[in-house]
Length: 290
Image (cartoon, rainbow, N blue to C red; front, side):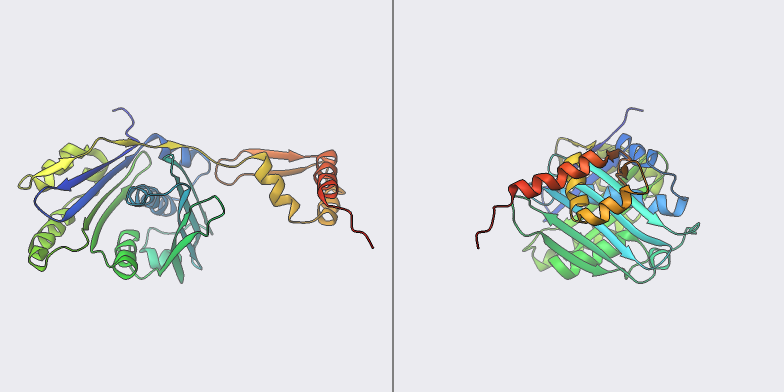
């Protein structure tokens, strides 16, 4: 089966409901190549990758959408980023060997944050919700209910090869009499098994769930893996530590090595690099007259 790194939107012609279906294959396996994740962490990270792809389709932006979990449990941190160019990267940090348990037990006290970085000096937008549900899908549904007042149904699944997600959302301004249809669609979506979500293509999934409805399926949008780390960004991060601290570190090592946690790329800075970094700052600083 060829890799399916794409998202497809669909619309119910006669109902105020829209949908999205995402399947990520090669990009997901690239994320997994970066480190060996325990099965419980891999499951949540894969669901988060699929969820971030789903969420990126509903937002018009030029920058990065970040889905992040910060928590106090065995799963301490999870970050997935989707670029406006449909690039994707992700990682997780954990302690020990976490069991495959409910999300709130795996994370403990924590929060889900959605951040939209618009770039070009504009302030980012951030929404935060507590990890109240037993699953990431339930937590995201709660986020949309609280922050956007948009009834939403989400199904997520992941294994070692594929991660996938389905989103249904009632459109703003839907009439009250449409509530029965919305309830019916939610019940149909709930019958979807994880294996079906991972294996069916978009047309097959719509046929399986919504064969009684008139549904318009849009062309797929393709995603790819890309990390936006660079030597310049890494140097800027080191610069914030200050020259004295960096020179102390160099006194014990021949060079400083910084590995990107997302892609694993290593950046090396020797004493000449560090000296040049701060010499450039000195030259850029205008002299002060007394």
